[in-house]
Length: 74
Image (cartoon, rainbow, N blue to C red; front, side, top):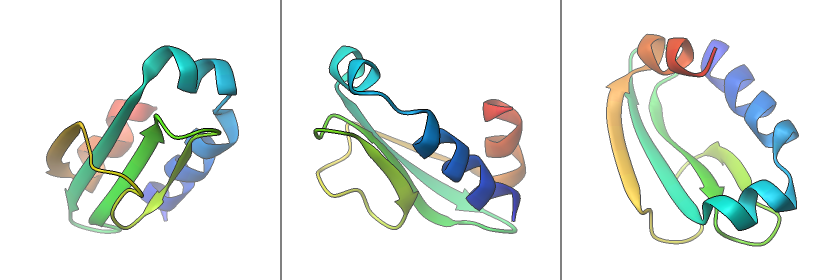
């Protein structure tokens, strides 16, 4: 779905430089189609993004609809 595709694009766009300059872990609590807990880890070496809880404690937790999440990142 659109949420999974958005996270796939985010993961593909990550660079070590972006992780080094950001140093943050973002957790998203999404409601609606494709919802659930998702994360973007821009702190751990190499970075990662995907479904579920982040591998380390989140610095920021955002709750929103999955539709708003997709709009925010497109």
